[in-house]
Amino acid sequence: MGSLPFLHDPIENSSSHLTKPLDSEEFRKQGYMVIDFIADYYQNIENYPVLSRVESGYLKKCLPDSAPYNPDSIQTILQDVKDHIIPGLTHWQSPNFFAYFSSTASTAGFLGEMLTTGFNVVGFNWVSSPAATELEHLVMEWLADMLQLPKSFHFSGNGGGVLHGSTCEAIVCTMVAARDQMLSQIGSDNLGKLVVYGSDQTHSTLQKATQIVGIKPENFRVIKTTKSAEFALSPEMLRLTVCSDLDKGLLPLFLCATIGTTSTTAIDPLEALCDVAKEHGIWVHVDAAYAGSACICPEFRHFIDGVEGANSFSFNPHKWLFTAMDCCCLWVKNPSALIRSLSTNPEYLRNKASDSKQVVDYKDWQIALSRRFRALKMWLLLRSYGVANLRSFIRSHVKMAKIFEVLVRMDNRFEIVVPRNFSLVCFRISPSAIVSDDHSYNGEEYNMVNEINCKLLEAINASGSVFMTHAVVGGVYLLRCAVGATLTEEKHIVEAWKVVQGQAHAILSACIVDLHNPMRYPNI
Image (cartoon, rainbow, N blue to C red; front, top):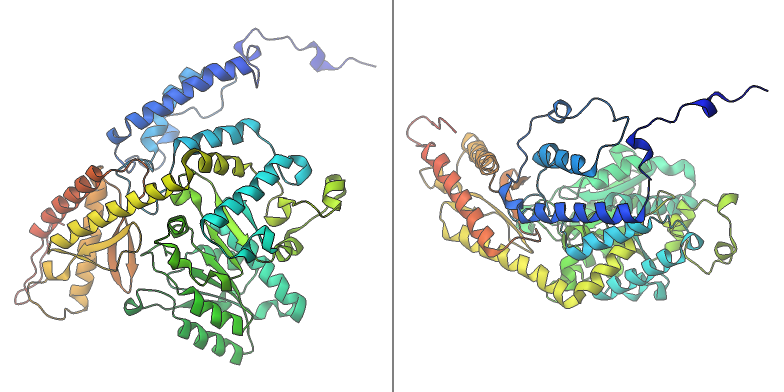
C-alpha cells in the first residue's frame, strides 16, 4: 500500500504554526487589547460623523481580494478596523444618534455578551446545557413580573417565555402556531382562506411573516389609520374588515397589534381589539418591540392594559433595555401550540430528560435548532443595574425627549405632528413657515412642504453632527427625533436642536413662497 502523500508535506517554517485557535494566555493578552480598543472608541465616538460618509464599494478598495495565507497580528487587524471599518460605520452608539429606534448598549450588556460568547454553548435542549435553559426560564419570569404580565403568560400559569433574536422571528413562530392550530380544525386544504390583519402603521415584519408562513398576499389586510385617532388601529375598522372577509368565505387568523409603532409610537387599543378578535377566534400578537421596555415603569404600564386578551406578547430589550443586540422576549399563553408546530425529535437528540416531558427544550420554541445563551446576558444586566436603575435610564430618555419637544414648540416655524408618547418626537417645518398666507394650501404646496422637510432632513444628516430619520403618515412627511442612545445627555439634545434650527434657517431663507407670485425656491 502506498504512503499517503500529505504525510510527506514539508512543515512550513511560518508563523501559521505558532498560533493556536484557543489559548488562555493569548486570549487574555488579545482580549485586553480589544477591550482597550473598544473603550477608546467610546471615548472618541463624538469625533466621528454619526452617519457614515463612505461610498458604495469603498471597502473593496481598502482590503485584499483574498484571505491571508499566514496570520496577521491582532495589532495589524485592529489598525485596519480603525482605518477602514470605523469610517464605514454609522455610529449607533453616538450620543447624537436620533434615528430609527436606538439599539441601546451598556457595560453589563457588553460583559454579558462576552460571557455568552466565551462559554459558547449551544443550548438547543435542556440536556445540552441545563443552566442555559433554566436561566432563560428564570429571566423570562423576572421580566414578566417587571412588566406585570398576566399570570397566563408565566410558566406558573401554563404559559411561558423564550428569548429570540428579533421580532420577525417571534411573529413568524406565533403565526405558524396560529396557522397550524386553525388548520387542525378546518383542514389543511383551507390554507388559502386564512387572513392576517395589521394597520398601515404595523411594522413590515408582519408582511414578511405572512410571506414566510404561506398566507396569500391578497389575504394580508392593511387597515388604514387616521390622524384623528393618532394613527392607532381602530377596533371598529377591524370589525368591519373581518366581517367583510367572512362574507367572502375567508377565515380570519391573526392580528398584530402594536404598542409604539415605528413611525410615530402610536398605541393600538389592546382591550377593544382583543374583544373583536375573541369574537372570531383570531390569534392576537402584541408587538411592543420598542415601547415594551418603558412599560417596566409604572407610569407607562397602562399602555399595555388589555394584554390579558392577547395570545402572545413580545418586546426587544436590545432597543431600550440596554442589552445590546440581539435580544427579543416572547411570551405565549399556550406553549404547546408553538411546540406542536416547531418541534422535531430526531433520534440523535433523544434523551431521558426530554422524554420525561419535565423540562423545556427551547429548540421547539423557535425556528432554528441551535441557539445562543442570551439569558446570561439578560441576567447579568438585570442584576448589574436592578429594576430601579433601568427605570431611571428610561425616564431620563423620556425627559430629554420632552426637552426637545419644548424646544420645537418654542419655535413657531415648527410644529409637533403627533403627540409624544415615549422618547420619540415627530416634528416638521410648519406649512405656515413656508406658505405666506394663512389658507388651506393646495396639492402642489402640500407636496412642497413635504419636499422642504425632506431637504431639511438631508441637510441635518449631511452635517455629520446629528442623524435622524423620517416617516410619512397621513401623507405628511415628518422628522423623527428618537432619543435613546445610552450616552445621550441634555447637552446633546440642545446641540441637536441648534443643528435643526441652523439648517432650517438656511433652507427657509432660500425658499420664498408667495401666493400672489409664482412659487420659487431655488438652491434647496
